[in-house]
Amino acid sequence: MGATTVSLRPELFDKEILDFSIDSRTTEPGELFFALSQPDYERAGFNGTFVDGHTFVKGAFDKGAIAAVARRERVQGSDDMQPLLDRLLIVDDVIAALQTLARKVYEAWAKPVIGITGSAGKTTTKELTAHLLKETGHRVLKSERNYNNNLGLPLSVLQMVSRGRRTDDYDLAVLEMGMSSPTHEIRRLVQITPPDIGVELMVAPVHLEHLGTIETVAAMKAELIEGLKPGGVAVLNADDQLVMEMKSKTNGPVLTFGLENQADVTATDIDTSRFGSIRFRLNTPMGQAAAELPMTGRHNLMNALAASAVATALKVKPELIANALKSAKPPKMRGEVLDFAAGFTVVDDSYNSNPKSLLSMVRTLVEAKDKIKRRIVIAGEMLELGPDSPQMHREAGHEIARLGIDLLWGIRGLASEIVAGAREQGLEAARFFESSAEAAAAAIDEVRDGDLILVKGSRSVETDKVVKALKEKFPLAAGGQ
Image (cartoon, rainbow, N blue to C red; front, side):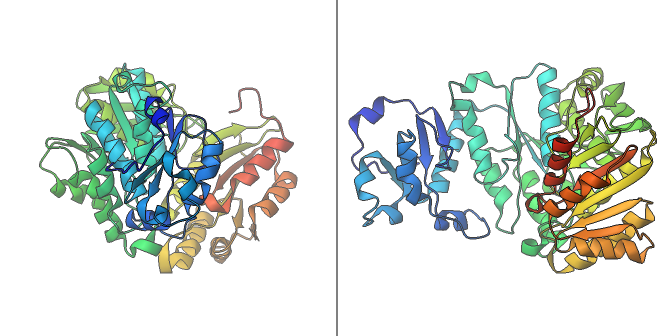
């Protein structure tokens, strides 16, 4: 880390660091606390204004942190830091120090890394990939939750040396790599853990508030392929032209997946007649196998094909992949199907949203055939879409109405444009709510037997409040989750 120790307490050198923390509120005894500050965030490409973590160093110590990593400029001449000097590791950039530490752990481990990026589906694909590889005999380190940025990825790597774990406990790592600004975030991430396999899921109009154009999104995503190890495998979505153009970024092998265009890993004989399950024939360069994915939606089938392509790159046979897919589960709030005893079903996809993923889920509702009386979409505002955001919301409303949804609710801000667009196409049963709390209260009185309800929205809109209210009011059916 290039840290200056000043005059650390001698007894600290005999203590083992149990874990690593960037949040004093959750710091536990034995952890090393990283005090992040605005200059660190800005250099690392984060958008926004952040609190100064140095003001919480004492609180972290009170909770049992054994030492803290602090920024030199912030410590020098600061009265609040002077009493704490004997427990501080002083560096020029705290985030860079965290990343350097993770890089050193990676270098000592030196085993394969699978990096996954895309405008949507990263977390689900990461979970599916990790699941397939675990079920087929690999010891897998994976990103926790959606830890995919310049803080989350190094913290994920440091799991290998936290809480009694050792690097020898893992054969490979499956890591999300995300970005939201044109500051080459993924380039930094692949410098920490250069991927042996790089997965590009899709390029969609997300984060346009900061990135400007979809071409810029593609260029920033392509940094994953540019950062592959020599001879590393690029796993590319054959159905996305911007992704396929990334073939020019590598001289190594390319493995494609898809449904619409010719691909190395694909699905045929697709059966979606049973809601919450997709049956299909998995086709790979190593052969074919009958498969079933206990999820819903074409996008999740694509995520499963991407994960299957990774397994194929690692020489896993298709019958073993198919067997592992049977026990896969969607991550929380990413397409969870909840069956309620009162006879209605909720698809909780409330973690994130963009126009492409929203319409994909709506089409899934339309395709469902099992005893459904009403199809309902509860859609929150979609954020960071840039100057064309109002039009994108309105066009989403147009398409939702054309697809034949029975009832549409929009929640917060520009979701009013979704409602307006649906009404323009003749869907009168469309209603706007200022907040998720208001929609949640109304949903309790609205739902009834035979309803199939999609709940989706950008995370900060908190559409999960609707799901929470329904779960508090109505019991789930036996085995309903």
